[in-house]
Amino acid sequence: MTHTLFSQIDDMTATFGSQVWTSLQHGTVLVIVTAVFLWAFGRRVPAGVHALLWTVALVKFIVPCGPALIGSFSTGLYSVGDPISVSAENVLMGDVHPWVFYMKIVLLSAYSVGVLFLAATAIRRWRRHARRAASLPPAAEPTRALVATCARKIGIRPPDVRVSDEPVAPHVAGLFHPILVLPRWLDDQPAAEEAFVLHELAHLRRRDHWLLLAIAFVEIVFFFWPPVRFAARRLRSSREAACDETAVAHGPLGAAAYARSLVGVAARCCGLERAGGLMPAAVSTRLEERVDYLLAPPRRTGRLWLVLLVAVWGVWTLAGARANAPHPTYGPCPEEAAAAAARNS
Image (cartoon, rainbow, N blue to C red; front, side, top):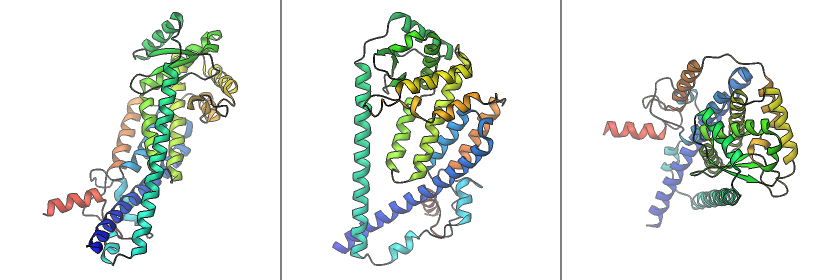
């Protein structure tokens, strides 16, 4: 009875480990491919496309193998092979050694505790941030009118607006009922205020407050894997640059003036995070890259072509391998193997 229980648990941990290893392999390779591609094309690709490509790279860690597609990214990886992987079938054919079993239990328990701790910490921080924003006083009517005007420019509904007396940067708090928090010091800079309002509203139009939640989920699940953190940082930087483009396109400031305003906000908020205040990613995330992107020469690329290319890229990279083209070491993707077994039965 005990041996049977050990075998069942060992089977489950082996299957789980195989799926996690597949996710790490495919996601890491896609992160490398994406990094090389964007390094080669750089500023010639709009920031919004950067963000979409990094989003696909992060999704690959969660969905390593989608529906089967001939010639897909996963099919290519399986055809190359993986000399360091171990067949789950070979592992399960042997006897279950007690020390291996207990080592798996310890590792799985430590991983679960780490994920739960990071998730609880993130949830507590997000809730504290939202409560702090909700406790701020409402903005004055001129500020609310400015936000409404900017919202009409980019085609969204204006959010609730609150004002903070602290030296914070403009930011959005909350998920279901987002709150736009504006520092009172922006009242003395009307042009910069409108540009920053457009930037934050662009985040709402892009649903970035939900994207941040998805990024945090992937980072927590794969907290031990550096490529995930690298891709998440690049995605945060890209989405900020994409919103900068919207602020320049619809706002009163040119690219150079807006870049100077970003540097001024960063200088004003410098050290605030160490002091326990709020310093959102809009200021703290790769400011140099955002400035360089703003000052880069204009890009002329057809939007329709870019959308089609990104769509094709997403389908190709997220699709799975063919069930009749198994990996030389550990077989086809788990989802495709199960589908093949169901068809054969």
